[in-house]
Length: 204
Length: 247
Image 1: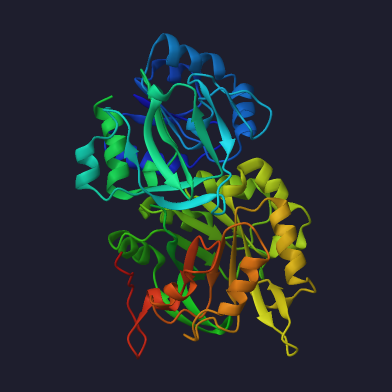
Image 2: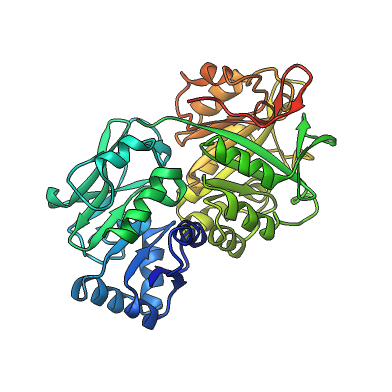
C-alpha cells in the first residue's frame, strides 16, 4: 500500500487522483500503523516550512517517518515543501527539518521576481529510476513549479534534477538511496508528471 | 526555460460559466458548464486555470466546495479559486480538496492582516491577491471590491505596498473598464502596477487576441497573462468556443 501522508498541508486529492489512475493500492493517512505498513510513502506539502514541521511534530509522526525512511529504507517521495522538509533546516522559520538529506532550503534571490510560479524544464543529473532521458524526450519536458525557497545540497551526488529560474540554477530534485524529493508538482504536470509518479510506484 | 503562464479566467455564476463586460453581471453571457470547459482545457494542455465566483462576495457566500472538488477531479492542470474567501479554515479546505492556490480580493481589503494570516499558514506562493481597478473621472486609479460593486478609498500605490508587505505571492489585477471589450490590455496600468510592486503580477482585462500577450512581454515581473473572452469566444460573432494558443 502506498500512503500519502496527511499532515494538514498539501493538495492531497490531486496526488491521490494521479496515483489512483495507476494503482488501487493507495490511501491518504496520518495513521502510524498505516505508515508502518506502507510499501511506499509520498510526503506532499504546500505552505510554510515551520508549519509543516510543527504539524508533523504535533501528529507525532516524526519518529515513525524516520524509522520508515532510515531504518526500513522504504521508498519515499517528497513533493514541493515535502522535499524541502527532508533537508536539515530552512530559512523559512526556525524549525529544523527531518535531516534525511544534508542541505537546507534558502530563499530565492534572483533577478526575476519570486515566487517562481509556472512551467519550467528539468535537466537530469544522474541515472535514476524516477525519470529517464527517454521519458523527457517522449513527453513535453515541463513541470509546474510554485515556490519561493529552493534546496541547497551539501553533497552534489544527491542532486537528481536541475532547473534554471532567472539567473539561478537550483536542484529541482534529489535522491539518496530510497529517499527522493522533487520541487515541482508532478501531479499537476500532465503526462510527464504522471510518468514520474508511475515510475515511483512501479520502478523505485 | 521558465515562461509566463497563459491563464483563462473563468467566471462562475449559479454554478455555470459566464463572461462579463465591464463587470456588468446583469448582461453576463452564459458560456456553459464548467466541467466541460475543464475537460477541453485539459486536452488543450492549458498552463493554469482561474475560477472566480462573481456572486460570492456580494451574497456573503464562498465559492462552492463541491464544484471545486469536481473541478479538481477533472483538472490535470493547476488551478486557483476565488470568491468570498474569508477565513483560514476555508482556505485549508479549498487547498485540501485540490485547488493549488486561492485568490483573495474583497477580504484582503476589508479584513486587516488577513493576507498575512494566510501567508503564515499556507506560505506566500499559495496566496494571490486580486485587485479590480477603474479610473475615476479625474484619471485616478480606484480600487473596487465585492465584484466591482463597491469603491474603496484606497490609494493604489499604498495598497500595492500593503499587499506586498503582507506577503502575498502574486498580484492578479483587472481593468474593470477594459473587461470584455477586446480593447487590449491597459498597458499604462500594467506598467504602473509593475513599477509599484516587487512581487510577480498577472494582468487581466481587455485582451483581444493571443497576440496581445506579446505587448506585455517587455514589462517587468509578469508571471502570467490572464484573459477571459479570448479563451472562450471565437470569431467576429463571438461564438462560444474554447480555445488556447499553441506553444
